[in-house]
Image (tube, rainbow, N blue to C red):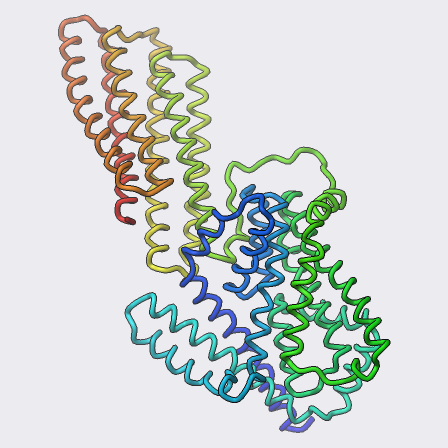
Length: 545
């Protein structure tokens, strides 16, 4: 091997590295910049599959990877956030969204001034300056997008220039002639390459780079492109390995959608190429690859969209129902880390589920301290164990999200969610304390007097309202619920002082037993601390407004 040949190999590998890195950097910047918008996309999802297609296309266009979108969909289905019909629409849309990258790559053939090679160095220079010297995070995100965009096209330029000296080499002509004459081999090649690099966008970009140098014919390019769409399913299939059956079905739907499309187009194009051998052997350029890639994915979606229900049923036959699976208490799936915005959406949802568990445990503990039943005590203990497990799982999940690329607003939300679940856990501890006090009442056969029961009911209602409004404020951040939380917390403080004095008077008058009196005072202390934690939760939300 000549030294120049080795240099060209190094140049191609370096160009490929820059292309992949630039794509990731650009997508990373786009995700952070559009984070809040992506988060709102989940709220758009309904049973309407058409909306799902639009959301799938939009998300994939932002994160520049249909594989990543589908992996997230598997995570959402596994978490119970999304059903299979919604997932099917998003998977179809993801295939359309992934065509954006191929159009970016083909810009090199739009004209000299429109060619990214022309202005890519300028983008790198401006993007780097913004990233290095701007203190504004929004501007830094824009700089990162520009930098990634520039590096991506410099990488493409490197790959193209390393291949151009060999455009007339017999090995390329022979290789693409073999791939073109055997459709199965062409599709298999596209699938394997895409499966290895885990990105159909990147593999299509490599094919377009070869086309830029005029060494790819129509027949081989079409079959390889069809294979690339199949290869992109591998990531989601691997991702679903440890998931529930419903999530496995989402990955199977993705595979079926792309395989059926590849088979349909493969047969049609084979007939066309057989009838038009000169056209099949002619050179294809990168723009024509983009056109075919887009037509294939849009047409495939239009053809299979009406049959989404059948795809779901077929996936259920391929992966049939077995024994009922145990449902996880929390729906936290690492697959959603592919997009920090969606991972945060899942974390917020589970924080609210934890809050609802806390409120339910508080209700049981309030009832138990008044009625003192062993069954109620055990229910509180069980609830507190669940709260502890949720606290550990959510804290670990939020810590992982915090290490991803986030905006300042998202970092603030992560911090406040961590504080919130810590306060939830402390409320659970106080509920456990109330259950233990109820146990003491049972063992000592102690009771509260009528007046003490009435007072206890009054402060318990105020405590519950403070926690309820704190949860409402966390669910839909607003000042009204924050102010109501603070109002009820103040009511609890005032009641606690007043009831403590009243009860000490009863103790001194001998109208209440000492043992029952001590438990009553301890109950008041725990209730007051619960309302304090509710006020803390509302305070974190105020910081976000």
